[in-house]
Length: 462
Image (cartoon, rainbow, N blue to C red):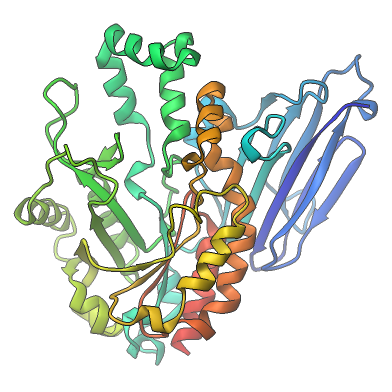
């Protein structure tokens, strides 16, 4: 009988015992292994759902504590085994962009879904679903290097920091405002070159979202990332409805307002006094046509945000990042380290990262991540996000499908992550300098990225 597969990925690292129940009609599995990336296929088979009397079969993720009644969250999608489509789901389409991590009594749950077609352009032909359960790591530096501990006396650069890729691109609000203001003329230009957009302005926004190599999910209630690499463009054109201030930029796509990001970050640091964050402003990926803010303007934005802390948070620089101890930074209140366009050793490669399965990225890790290559660099960035939209056929499919649920980034998130993160966990200690800052960067950052960073930080500070 016809069927459609769902590839289910899970990662659990949670004290007190947590289990994830996964099911489709007549197939069930419970996973509880700690710190282990697990994956397996679940088949929605027409022969097992009394088709055609019933047209869909339900795939379910249920996260619970060991007590079967203590359900933290249950997410599902109804799959048509004939067409392969997802007919409905608990988090889907418009609401998928609003997905936040679920915080429950010290635990953080992150999840995502990719709606697969028949496997065009090398993309998966099974729906992809992932669920990650970890501690709520909003104060992880305070746990790894408590005040007064020997670990706190070590250099801050010994930390391994988790980072979202293009943190300021976590919303399509700015792009939607521009499209709404652009009106019919701009839409006609786009639809003339992209016939799939004839369905209207909503489709244009979905295509842009699907092609953007950005982190489009919302920031979690408590930030679990400590490093943010960001690209900032100048003020918007007078022809847009946007307020006259700085915005994040990735290629031609604008992101959130820069001042709002800094304000949110400072508020997080005030709330979590043991934590130290790094902001790295870069220009690569910003079109040359976009004028760049000068140092004075960037400093004004930073000062305005720091003022909101009433002296609880001060800024530091690259010298602090490289040489100061964790204790020194905390005592001096330098908990927002701000650097601009610094030279880094990065694993990113246009060819290696243009992948749908991550294997070429493993090769890039093996080639780049060595102590010899780190010489003369201020920090090292291991980039775990694939850029499948650099593949011509993937771009075409993303435009034709024009859907949030079919964006190529979601196809590769778990598929690449379950290969790359274990590699970093198992190889960084033997290959990289222990006193040069290492950043683990990923799209749709979740607790598994942070969990690996925490584990490596503990080892480097021991």
